[in-house]
Length: 478
Ligand SMILES: *[C@@H]1O[C@H](CO)[C@@H](O)[C@H](O)[C@H]1NC(C)=O
Ligand SMILES: *[C@@H]1O[C@H](CO)[C@@H](O)[C@H](O)[C@H]1NC(C)=O
Ligand SMILES: *[C@@H]1O[C@H](CO)[C@@H](O)[C@H](O)[C@H]1NC(C)=O
Ligand SMILES: *[C@@H]1O[C@H](CO)[C@@H](O)[C@H](O)[C@H]1NC(C)=O
Image (cartoon, rainbow, N blue to C red; front, side):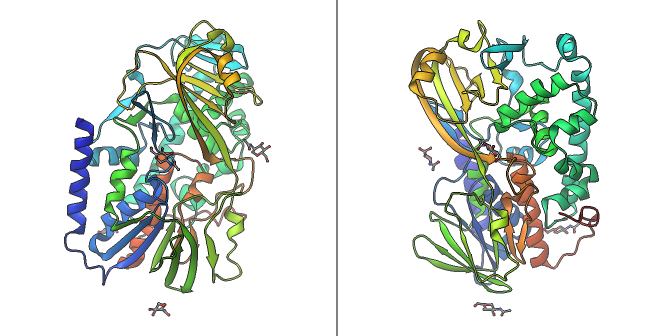
């Protein structure tokens, strides 16, 4: 109850602050296509910078919050999509604070029954708690590699954190790679190396790469260590922690951020038409037409899905180049008693399967969005395809409730585009989800939102911040 009251309170404050004396007739019109965490944060950051000088419309035909949402099982709620963020993910943390929310920390689980790394039903490694990276415990198997992980991840997090300084100076970049390059040139190199190669270069052992990095990739992205090192290191940062989530559910962040919009249109945009260099026309599936000075596409361009149509753009505008494959990940929530033997053990709290053809990718015991462990344990299984009743009856001795969420969750990094597409598709037209091809995470969407909001507000306010150079001089192929 308290949580809902708080949502309502902070939400109202946001609304009052920003709708009070707006003069839509003078304001620049900004259309945001997609009300996930990226689209909603774009609206919020634009509002911060532009106040009444912007009239913001967010189009969202399905649910505000997109892939950041919880599911209900037996009256309790559990994170189903974007579930965690790193302690050092500054933009997530700032939003939590700003909205008066609280975070839950992973360490809050004191029921830990251990973590397994499996190949199918064969247990390769068992840790008594979630400190797989506790060097002493893993020494006999992984040599010195566990000791190298923390410095490696910390170094990368330090470089990455320079992005926040750039934003503090109002900098914006037209490509994800330019932004990373401006933060630290080595981050861009991580787009070109696979995670396996980057870890070999850094001196990690083969077994550690295959098993520990493999497990991290499997649980975070349902993919293998052949992915680019950049997204791989996000995965490993997730293994290293500390990890946070929002008490009461991460979906509060997009919901509250979207209160900054003037209008939320519950429709799907079917086309973006370039009217002239400073004006776009959006048409939605209800047949409504509206014109905008700026457009932010905050929904991924996915192969095999109806995407927005681009009309009237010059021939060098090649939308097809930015469309990619998204990986299907099925999250199955089961209340019941696992058949621990099926997973090769007598008890565990989490298990990761590095068999690339395995029926399941990971299984872990869940706490609710308020951090409670229900009396009858609830488990989240990730898999690449829906689990049949027959599979579930092998994996569980008893199933008392279940529900399933089928996501197009994140890019398949083995398929084109192999480099992140640009943020800026055309003057005044931005593609937020380009950032997912560098790495897909809540913080990455917030970073893209901040970058795009800076670009738009700099243009509207006539600001020309002095910013470090972008990447193209070095990587001509980008
Ligand atoms: C950054 O932009 C804001 C408006 O969003 C402006 O008030 C501020 O002065 C700018 N700061 C710098 C360092 O340019
Ligand atoms: C929207 O949210 C509702 C309630 O949480 C859920 O049942 C539904 O599946 C969601 N729709 C989509 C498309 O995610
Ligand atoms: C662009 O089109 C809009 C609406 O059609 C019009 O008001 C505006 O003057 C045009 N701008 C330019 C630069 O042609
Ligand atoms: C990802 O792409 C690779 C390369 O095309 C393909 O082999 C693999 O099956 C894809 N993964 C999924 C889950 O679709």
